[in-house]
Image 1 (cartoon, protein in one colour):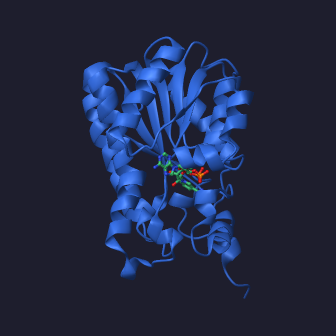
Image 2 (tube, protein in one colour):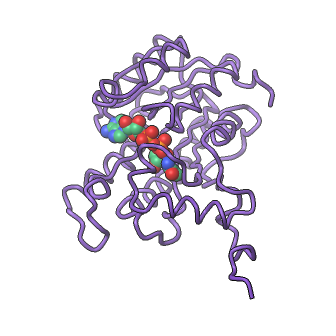
Length: 268
Ligand code: NAI
């Protein structure tokens, strides 16, 4: 991989909590590719997680923001453009949380105030960020914005609970805002649909290990790792992908297109 394809680019990376986080790998890969960026996470994640050490490794500013708060998002954009010295060229939205999933409330027995929180944190936060940046003109022409999603937005994965509805909404927001931003200044907005990955968010899904093994076995290439997802994000942030927008891009080792894997059939 060409290690300087993000030279001169300014970014914001949401969602690095600890070394397992996909966003953690994206930060390391973006740094290697020559980018400068700010890191952000919710105040509680900054207190409890390891993100401060990532900020030291990446020599970057860490800005606290609850992704559901318009005020925090405005402050994040103001501070980021200030410390980075100009408008933002790339963004990673790697934010997700479902109180229903956390509290083992299954899809047929959801708590609706939790459901609203799931949608607010995991989907509306993306709209709030994009709308705030729109009003502030904070994204540079031909910026690239990526949000991480999961195939439960298209197909049923029992156990993924209300996150499936949040991801469907997230992908729709990417498509719709992609239209408006494309017309406005060429900014492209896409979602990357990632394989199951062992992270705090991933492990919160009931039966995650079985889920992970199933996908690993059926996908011709096996599951995509967090670090390969990071490489893909770097490419998507780069100028090599200027004409890709409003897409949901599967980064899943072929899982989404595989109907049957012969290795998984019982022996005769
Ligand atoms: P993670 O648990 O490391 O990251 C989730 C992040 O969301 C955490 O850093 C957390 O602090 C942040 N967050 C939660 N509430 C927030 C709020 N109110 N404001 C700001 N940040 C908040 O787990 P992972 O897996 O790296 O998750 C990143 C993204 O990737 C999520 O959108 C997740 O749904 C998605 N994804 C994960 C997969 C997996 O199997 N781990 C598969 C496909 C997509």
